[in-house]
Length: 412
Length: 117
Image (cartoon, rainbow over all chains, first blue to last red; front, side, top):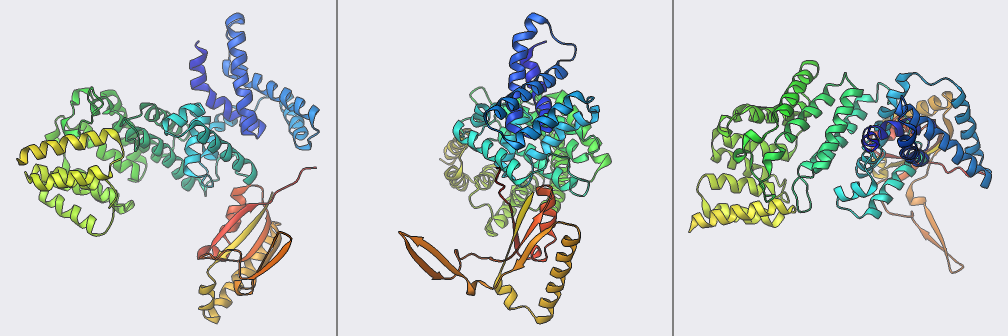
């Protein structure tokens, strides 16, 4: 067994248990690290224990007892003394039932994604504790300085402690609302990986992979949740196009120009199966509808086989449960593909007339594309220039510049 | 844990309300307060006089400066508070959500600092 792999796969689970036992994020993180260091030292010589996870939990527990004893020797702290007494009692007591331990990670997810924490803090904490990513890795993924990310994590843990954010699975009456928050956090991680808003590359695979891993975990821990399945389906379907979305130079390849043989068929199959399960047991949630749209793209063997009319209908439904100008814009594009660019342009004009999305580069980009399809080169060029003034991602910028050059060429 | 629930609302709304509506809200507050007394969560609670009666004092370089008005002009004003005992933030939040003013104003939930000896 590879200890590094074990760390990736098990550290979140072990940490979750230690947080429950210790009631202290920092102490738990420290002793879990120490337990893995001990494993690195001892296992090569002494052999791998029969149950590595139990060994790590028990070692981390002993390390916690040592640390608390040491702290108490220096300063007689009532609270730590109490914690030590509880912990020592636990160690002589029989192990808790498996269900308690299985629920530890679920407790941790709900604590990390508690609505009393800012969304940036929820994301950082979830990736750090459940994902086992280092502070440096998370900082790199979100393009912030390591010190900023470290402080964000410290503050979040401080708030959990001082504000009394509970370490528990929410009661039934709060569960739907809290689950929404957890799913949104995971989806934000995915989205930031799938269409990075900043930086040079469009896709940050490690974030996509991490979000999918968290999505799988949620499905495993909440097998009765259709929303969790729908979210995993959505992420798998989007991610299945990963290899075809970028060319060799990291440039964007649009959906209709992608080499569909490079789509990940196994992932598409898994996504579609999950989607069916989600729709069989639950309502057409926001994630289910988006997954259904991604599924229609995935099923089309050639771009011209895409069922745009059905996609536009799904966007209609999505607008009803999640009214948003971005969904509206996507619907306009689907209508344009089904009924002709003029219809799409009219809808885009309406969105713009409502004063929405005026800083969103994809609105003029969508208009530019429809004008290009109509051969209205001068207007298309103007719209591409408008989009270029708003875009922040370097890969998207290069794509828009290439298109602008093409339509300017045509116009001459 | 103890939490201070600070009730912020627009005083202007209150001033334009009919006597009947004011009476209804007052009744709701009475019922809420009795409820959290019975359940053992209540530690203290009061309504405050309007911000037009507020005075702010600062001591700078040994000199006491007193000014008319609240510490900060905000869209919603502090109108009252409850001090409650709750087992965690979720319980405190569910109590705060039942304060009648939560439906039109906002309730800020602040854990009370505990000094260890």
